[in-house]
Amino acid sequence: MTRKARSPKTPPAPAAPALPRLSRLEIRNLATITQLELELGGGFCAFTGETGAGKSIIVDALGLLLGGRANHDLIRTGENELLVTGFWGAEDDTDSASRRLSHTGRGTARLSGEVVSLRELQEWAQERLTIHWQHSAVSLLSPANQRGLLDRRVGAEMRSYAAAYAAWREAVTRLERLQASQRERARQIDLLSFQVQEISEVSPDPGEEEGLGSELSRLSNLHTIAQAAAGGVELLSDGDLNALGMLNEAVRALNAGAKYDETVAQLQTELRSAIDSVQAIAGELRDVAEGSAADPEALDRVETRLGALGKLKNKYGPTLEDVVEFGARAAEELAELERDEQDAGTLQDDVDALHAEVLKAGKILDTARQREAGPLAEALLAVIRELGMPHARMEFGLSPLDTPAAYGLSDVLLRFSANPGEELGGLSDVASGGELSRVMLAVSTVLGADTPSVVFDEVDAGIGGAAAIAVAEQLAGLARERQVLVVTHLAQIAARADHHYKVEKEVQGGRTVSRVRLLDPEERLHEIARMLSGNTSEAALKHARELLGA
Image 1: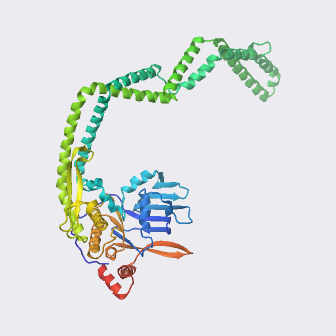
Image 2: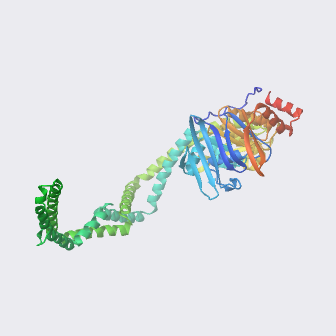
Image 3: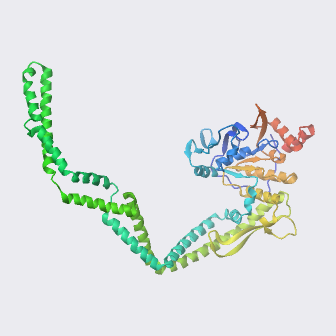
């Protein structure tokens, strides 16, 4: 289908990152959707439908993949769980993200089939998908977000300042800690020195207790061990009636039969081997009996060692692993305190030098912000004026802070006026809801997004006519660089889409069911006519053809 050529008046959006776009979305049991498998095209994708058809369900589903709050009311009535799965990339190289919610309160997140935490799912999806919700324009009222708009253009200077500020604050914190209480530091050094020495003198090994326990049991029962071994020797070899004597008698008894029977001969040979084994065992038992005399010194050493380990566990345990870990932490803290003691005299000089670096980096950051503030404001105004506010004015103002902050030496405030003759003021003070939405739309299209897929959920609410055409232009321009998914009620916007999807609602078996389908050219013509006039009369169809450029 051909369209009339239009040239955007604003600069092109930043290029999309080298990540794949959203290619497929599968939804099961979410609100009025029972089962949906939707193939998504690149470029500009519009979703339309009658009021109440469930257009925003698509956005709700994608919001779950971004880690949105688990609202169990989204689960279709009568079902136990819902499942949303998104696929990024081509068929032969696809990554997937899915999220399952159930009425039991348990949920599961997966990346390419592997179970992950919700945070991991969120971080992965946020690199690939951005959603501009219907009411997200209120985020522009935050000074931090206003500052963030400008700082996206001064990333290098912002990173340099952040590094300088972090180093300075670390030094300040350390100096304040040093100056807080020298007496407390000296007391802490004494305590840590004692603890480290106490643990190091014992030098515990987390694996030694089991062996020591066994050795204690043996040493405590040497008399019993000697008696048992001596009794064994008596029965095996030394007694008047012993096992070796009886085994030898058995060998002699088999002599006659062994001459005539191979089995008997083999058994006699095995019996002789048994005699050898019994003799060896008797010898070893004799050594045990003779070597198991009481050893009070060895017993005392083991008991003393176990007592020392138990004392450490009572103080620093409950396990030897805990004792060793405590000792390592104490040694590290002691070393730091001793360094602080040595560095106290020179640290103030370091703080002063780092503060100078912060001021230097901050001035460079402010210069960069001032350099970018004008062009960014003009780029935003070019869009805002096309959106039905021809007299709008805007500027980014910098207000110096008394002391350096984590974000710079100045506050950044976005000042705005929609009407001629009115003074510039803060967005929260002078912008209406509709004006704020148009500013947000300008921000979204001028600054674009850092993801390959961007979703707009009815950000065109409250506009029409020439402003609607201008919004369509901006969205189409953004779609030249990345995939843009737009839920809209405006025919002017839907007509610019590369792919037009219709959300429909019907009753099946007494239940409401929503479905989404890609429209063919004829169906699209009728949908645009319905959006324009509420009917598909010949006049409405003619108007739709004109809007489509057909």
